[in-house]
Length: 255
Image (cartoon, rainbow, N blue to C red; front, side):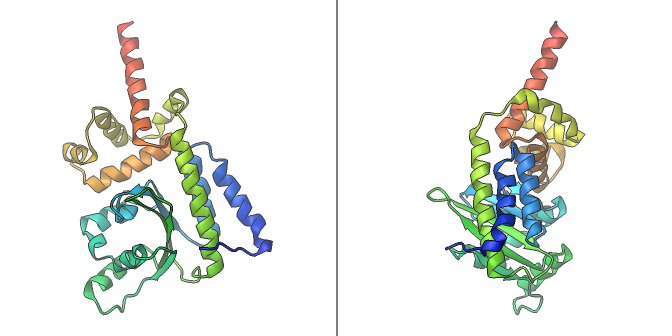
């Protein structure tokens, strides 16, 4: 797709891209990206990079600003299996709009439509991104309005999506300064600390969900929140921080 933006709007777009490029950690990247899509009239977003299952773009995104209730219900009711909006978008190699239609002839689409509207989602756009062979990458942005469905907005969103993916990949490639992040553990809830400790023992999210009596979607959501709050780029980095703290506590106890 050729990305074209009117010259008079390039300065504003450039300002948003600079904020994304200068983010020093995941927290700042999420903040910059959320501000950028809201500048365009969207409310929430999800970015998924190199996912084997294309539906993971909504189930286990790398960056997500959607609230936990939405993701949990969407997964629990397995709405993704009949998500015609998502399927239509995934079948296209170019950015694709979708507008919620409560009058759709198919009952399961109407059910999904009412669910989306209950979460104030009236329209969405799916932007495909470069991915490794056999994988898919994308950004999905949702809006409580339908007047964002313009070509100029789509072009800007595509630029922001690519800039964000590049920055996310860069942050993942840079070693995390654990000492600088350890103090952020105070930002986590007691439940998130427990999840992180179980992860440190090698437990998967599915196993942690069983141990703690949570849904897997709930644990997935908490892990995204943990990664965001700690300002790290991966699960491995988050676990390394709690491991460092535990080692320090053990050394202090034995001193």
